[in-house]
Amino acid sequence: MDLLKDSLKKIYPKFLFSALGGAIIASVYSLVDSVMVGQYEGEVGAAALAVVMPMYTIIFSLGLLFGMGGSILMSVERGRGDLRRGNFFFTVSLICCLAVSFLVFLLLFFFSGPLLKFFGGEGETLQLAERYFAILKYALPVFTVGQFLSCFVRSDGNPVLATAAVLTGGVVNIVGDYLFVFVFDLGMRGAAIATVLGQSLALIVLCLHFFSKRKKIALRLEKGVFRASAKIVISGLSPFLADFSVGVLCVLFNKQIQRFLGTNALAIFGASINLFILIQSLAYGIGQASQPIVSENFGAGNALRVRKVFLMSLAVSLVLGVISCALSECFPRAIIRVFMKTSPETDLLAPTILRKFALAFPLMPCNVFLLYYFQAVLHATSAWIMALVRGMLLSGLLAFVLPVLFGGQAIFFALALTELFVFCANAALLCFFSRKKTTNAEEVFDKT
Image (tube, rainbow, N blue to C red):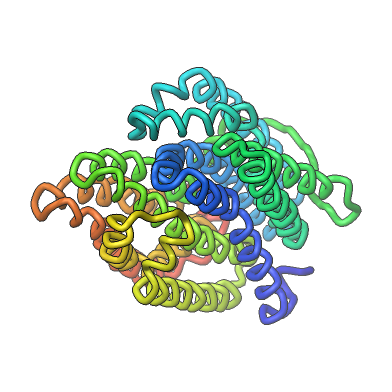
């Protein structure tokens, strides 16, 4: 397909549905584990997965950092007609991803115990978290490289294979969770085994793209590796921060919830954050669907096509956010029961917590998409600053301040207040950039 000339009404839905399907299945890895473990181990198991959640986000966000950063630059270069330079950015991104993955693997492999304690694990919750991560840590590079390759396969014009990879891995994960957790009675370890198998198979499917005749991507090295590495990091920083910040917030929330509200509330938070990650993953899908089209047309100077994709993606993001909030507000108890066997105390507490938490949902997909959009048109500095404010600075500050000032449950308003502030700031940035009318890709690219 030709991203510069084909009808947007035809190509955009292909990218969108493939990316959304991939996002849904990718979320299965944490969602199904949470559901199965919650039903098998109860509230303590759900709390244990909330402790492990930061590990997930560290692993996946690194793949997103180099995958999104490199694929954006590759798409822009292709839009400018330089296929060889685009392949150079792919090669440098791959080298960076493999090197950083190995270093993080060593860190998490040898220091997983202290890290899980730091992430909020205590007593039985910590024991179950360690049991789960003892299996998961052997396959950490697979998670990172899989996320990385998914970005490039999609940008290389094969969104269907990227979706097929996560679909295949997701099915294996779902079936494996049931077999290993319940049939073979392995509990937490069984859920981890199923996740590793699913991710490994997804990586194998992604690698098939490099044996396809339709691929344009190839390995190429030339001078300027360090300068290219810096551009890749800057370009991928905002999606990385958006994803990585979920792990940071999990740590902050875990500690604050344990301090002010106890294990029952932590279990509900574990279910709620999985729902948050599902919605954010769908928002990632909207951003990832628009990114190749926006970046390539931006590189070619096709401002009208960029604007059309922007408006379509923003509308889809808003619909996603409103529907997610409405379902959470109307059916909070049913949603929490999907994730775990609830005690009477938890059942009574769940609606209050989830309804507060869900107030963040209407604007959250719009904010995530706008991060991807700013990256795609090479306004990297604005994107990563907003990602940092949204992901850690403002939300982290509110997580500390609100419980102290207004009681423990006020912490669940932190994300909603953050999303509101960031949305207003993003709107101001859009107005600023529209007045500048910067459409010269070479000018913006050279400043990156």
